[in-house]
Amino acid sequence: MLWKAKVYLAGAGPGDPDLLTRKALRVLAEADCVIHDRLINPEILALANPTATLLDGGKQPGRQEQIQQQIYEWFLRAGSTARTIVRLKSGDPMVFGRGGEELEFLVRHGFDVEVIPGVSSAIAAPALAGIPLTYRGIAASFAVIAGHRQSVSTLDWSVYKDIDTLVVLMGVELRDVIAGSLIANGRTASEPVAFIEHSCTQRERVVESTLGAMARGLVDVEAPAVLVIGDVVRHRTQMAPAGIAEAFA
Image (cartoon, rainbow, N blue to C red; front, side, top):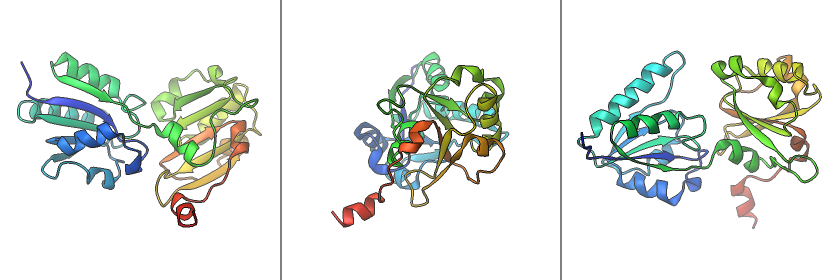
């Protein structure tokens, strides 16, 4: 079957509308249908074509597979009527967003599909909080880990022993398990950690602690938050919020 629609797998970035790519902004303005993640900033959704159909494809605990199948059905249903479908994902569409699976589905079903990379929160959140993921003489490598239940239970934690900086996405709920697993596999309990809550929003908060305290459940933090583990946390530079800095420029 030849589908009328072209599908864009687009990254919405870490949440700030100003961090959208120009291409993502353009296709949103042209979209007939936008299938979006749950945590997409409403200000970004407001940039979509006002006549576009907006469909919430956000995953909910216990219903991930059911909702994923619903997204596939939406692709097929809209494919014969819409000209432009935007599948809008948080951060980058190919980083822990099942973008690879959706790309395979769309190609297998004959869609014309294009990926629009986005700024991943794994890199943006630490940078905006003043934490460098690499630092000369301190950190020459970093790894990004999915911290949700399925990933945590299957990971070989020993491979992360000697990586300088670790960034964990979706790791708030199981933070004590993550920390305990890393310590058990060779990382030190005194190693600094930082959680960046609600990055790119007015509610942003950075919580610094240690891996040992995290393992003992002593770090109070709420999702969504990006976790950074490593000596680079000691090099965090606290900056004034952008709005304040601009006001005094």
